[in-house]
Length: 353
Image (tube, rainbow, N blue to C red; front, side, top):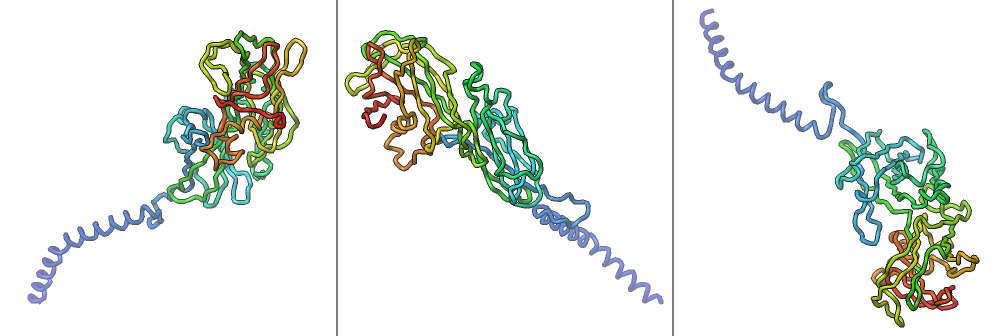
């Protein structure tokens, strides 16, 4: 009996010496298992929360002639529509705050696992918007039914003729644990066109002596941002005035010379190669046409040779600000052999009219 008790006492002492080591080793092993489990978000322990799942989206507008991201500077409100892998509407997210000014802004969306189509519009949710959805999508609505149109009073209300910028972009992306990252690249759907009238031999012109207009069928957008026919509309200036310009034409050269000019600024919706926009300038006194020309053709003439690999539609989409100079004879008629477009002298043949 006594020998047995002594052996038991010795075994107990040895076990007590090993227990601190065993307890420490067990703690280290447990912590390692927990750390290994966290990134994969496996629910080994019932009290762990599931991994956040969805997407994190960045928005970029660099589809411009500068090839630089102008999203933080230009887009002041954002509407994101979410469609599932069957192109059925799921949800809308709207942002109108100063966070859009942050170059590092990301929109995080918690979504069920799957692949989604994201459609982004800049300019729809702003108080000064010029475009709106024809109908607010409901759960299960089809992507192909999405329509955006210009609000009609933008053509007639002097305070709304200067169109608020409209931007569009889309992205297909699958969700992931801890959020799949994606970039929605956007393009601009609105333009500003400045028309300048100048007498060939100097003198001052008054904008009140002329009526300016651009006609086009470009006020309705489909879900893919393509234009749908909605009827021809007439854009008229949001601003007219007089200014001193520092250029005139001598032969085929633009040379510095201070002269007084009349100008008009017009905003239009997207210009497309399949459309036929036309610019007309009339004498206010009798309605006679001073300038009557196919606008698209002349805007495309100013494209630099540096962009030979850029097709016509890409150029019209990237460029959004145009300046056209027209030179008039003393009797007010247009010298229709040349114009200046964004500082480029363009010679015109009768066949091009």
